[in-house]
Each structure stands twice: as C-alpha cells, then as structure tokens.
Length: 438
Image (spheres, rainbow, N blue to C red):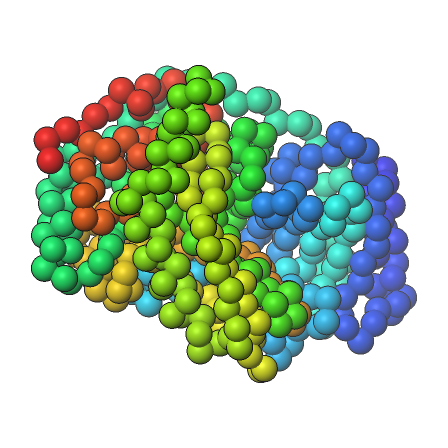
C-alpha cells in the first residue's frame, strides 16, 4: 500500500528535521482505497498494546498502537495531554476489587493512531522525548496486509459457568434478597467457554462481528500477543463534547424472530411489559442520581424506544445533560460505572452479591472502553464481549434480575445474547439449551 508507506516516510522525515509542534503530535492525511480494512491492517502489526475502536454511528474508526504513557488513574493524564491528543483504554467491571493493575484499569497515550473521521483517514504520531525510538516504531508499521479468511462456524465443545443447576440456585438467592429489600435489582452474568477445533484470530472474529452486528460499538484490546478482549456492544456509557453530555438507559430485552409479524409482536410485548419497563426505569433513576452532582441540568426521554439488533431487541431511553463548570469528562467513568444496567441497584449491595455468588471474575466484561481528551470523550459498556486465546473463546452475557424473573426465561436471554458472537465461530445450537425448574 504505497500511499501509507509514503506517509510513514514523510512523518519520519518531519521528526528527523524537527518539524514538530509544541503539542508533541504530528499528523498527515492518508488516501486509502475503498477496500481498505483497518481490522485486517491491525492484525498485521507487531506493536503492542494495540487497540481498535469504531463508534456506534460508524463515523469514527481508530487503530491505536504502542504506548508513550500509561495511567491507572486517568485524571493524571490531563496534565500531559495536548489539545488533539487522546488517551485510550478503560476500567474493568469491578476495578476496586481487581487482583492486578491490568485487571482494574488500563489507560494509555498511544504512540501511533490510524484514524478515520467520516471518510477521511490520517496517520497520527504522539511524540515522546525519544525521537529515535519513535522512528524505529514507525518503521515497524506494515503498510500492506492480506485480508483475513472469512470465519466459518466450526465444531466445538461448550461449557457454562455457572451451569444450569447453579444458575437456578443463584437466581433463587437473588429473588430472596430482592424480596427482603437488600437490593432492587441485580445483574447476573454467565461465562460460556468455547473450545474450538481450530484456533482463530481475535481480529477475524471482530471483523465478522462488525459486519453482522450493526448499530454497535466495536472494540478490541490486546495488551500482549497472548490474548485479546473484543466485542460489539450496543450500549454507550457516555459521550461528552465540551459541556454537553449524552448517556442512556439500555435495559429490558426480548429476542427477535425471522417472521416479521412475530417479530413485531415481540417488540410490542417488550414496549408494554411491566417487568422490563420497571427494569429500565431502575437504570434511569440510578443514572440521574449519579449524574446530579456533576451536571447543571438533566433531560430524560419520556418514553422508552425500541432498539433492534440482530439477535435481540432492547428498551432504551436517552439521557442528556449539561456538565457543571470544572467537571472533567473522565470523572463520569467513576460516577457511572458500573451502572444498574450491568450490576444492579443499589450499586454496592448488588456488587457484593455478585462478588459472593458469581463463580467467575468478570474482568473487562461489563467494564468500559473508549477514549478521552480535553474536550471530548466517549466510552462504551463492554457487553456482548469475548476473550480470545488461540482455540479457546470465552463469551460473556448478563441478565437483569428483578421481581418476576424466571430461571428459564433469563437463561434463554443469555443464550440469545451469547449467540451474537457464538454463531460466528461455532455450529453449537445454543438455542436448544434450557434451564427449567424455577
């Protein structure tokens, strides 16, 4: 890809000749053919960490490579950020109780960003004091790539954590706790471990998911060559532009049907179901409470709208606000995460229940990933996600438990959410798995 090679050489010359601004960032447009695929390009690169992001509206796409600075506390980044620089990364689900630093949070100022805004691509370099090392890293970039082979569903073995009997037991404990007023809602998760006959590349799965799962944020984070965390999530944590804030309550779920008439019946049922509307309102109330200390005004969409995805459909309500003077966007991470949509309400009581009863550690699943700068920030909630390590893929999904929840219904909801990625890699018929009895 000669155009990218020329841009790389041009940036190297600028660095050698000292043609850099006081902002410690240089940038140059890149002309790519319409067939260029950033995920395939990412797969060819050897620099780590590597991070991929595509916004839900598809207007922005970024590959971020290598690191100049890393941050556990993202607030510290503001002191060194230039006007156009962004820090990428996020926080794990239960960051305060993570066992290691990388299980809690990981933010980095990348050395190299390949960025698309609408149809315009650019290659951007954030500079450190070691210009020679930056040049060496630029020379490591591979301009050319081979398109990855399309994924084909293959034979696999599938295991759940928790298994059905344990799921029923945990759900029963949750309903008893709700009845005794320990909390209003708790979100219980399931890990699906898929052992494939042949290894796959994380980028292959993300590439296939981006095609199949529209209206989603698409992300991939690899801190080393050993494993990758990726996903295609419909849920925004928040978007900040100046003092304007956008977030949402995404809660309440039903499946889809290939028959248009039946699909509409499912949608109408969801829009009028008391349990799902109540679950959505719980999330709205939680977000309002958490944002109030940081905002001058908050506006909530009066009625829930329907969001239709490939396998499921959700209830969503938009929430907008004006940030108070002096509030930094990244402060909203701690304020909002974890929301009632992925943990429960009240937060600490539901988190304690999850810590005690879920038989695995969520890690980055239902955490947040995205970016922040001085004037803009956007983070998604890492649901519909997976960890890929050679031929082992761990898929994650959760279900909100409120009064009236039933084990089989929630188990089927987990199946539908898991199928978002599972059906791209495996021929396992997850829709046939049931968990009846409570």
